Structures are given as structure tokens and as C-alpha cells.
Amino acid sequence: MKKGFVLLAALAISVGAFASEGWMTNFEKAKEKAKAEKKHILIDFSGSDWCGWCIKLDKEVFSQAAFKEYAKGNLVLVMADFPRDKSKVAEEVQKQNDQMAKDFGVRGFPTVFILSPDGKTVAKTGYQAGGAEAYVKHLKDLISKGQ
Image (cartoon, rainbow, N blue to C red; front, top):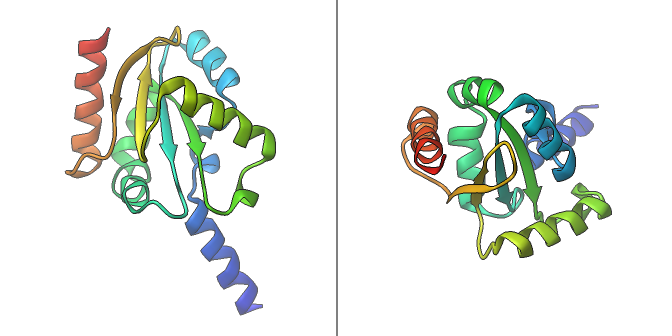
């Protein structure tokens, strides 16, 4: 029993808590939601199980209360994940993510895009040192400049 729990915990850590924390994987549904709720879209292009900076961004920012609180009221979150273990992402989501990476010109991970509620690119960023509060301020600055 202990072995199964440890394996399950390791899997949860490696994948992250994206789905359970409001992260969407269907980009079309996220765009519909953003438009309906008049919220910006944050897309995180990530290699969740191999990219050190992606893991650091998730741990220092996306999993923190300050970011979650800001995101809940202001953002629709989209995870475009490119894990080494392809079994972590459904085939149709992999195809969507590949197309999104091509469309957005993603060349490395993590790459974070902010889109307006109508789906237009407002800003592109990535990992920023300083923790969740500093990252929220960074996002607010990007959004205010990009509107």
C-alpha cells in the first residue's frame, strides 16, 4: 500500500496540480471562457516533467496562493504541456499543443503568453525571479501595457 501511495504522490508531483487548480488544456474552450468572462488568457508552454525552469516557475509562482488568487479573478489558465512522458497528455491535446507552439513561435520552455479576452497576443514572458507576488506584478504590468 505504501509503495502505491508513493508512486501516486510522485506522479502527482511530476505532472503538477494544473488540472485541479483551474488550468485548462482545451485552448478553444479557454478562449470561449475568456471572452464570456472578459478575462485575459495565460498560456504556459511547459515541459512539466523535464524542464527545470518550468518546474521552478510552477513551484515558485503557479502553485502559490498569491498567484492563484490573482488568476482566479483575472485569468483563464491554459497549460500547453510537452512532457517527455507522452502518456501524461492525451493524443488530441498533444496535437493541439504542437499546433499552438507552431502558431505562437515557441522556441523554448517555459514560454508564457498573455492574450486579451478576444484572443489577441498582449505579451510574451517566461520565468521571472522573485516569487508569486513579483510575478503577479509583472503580469499586471504586461497587461496594462498591452491593452
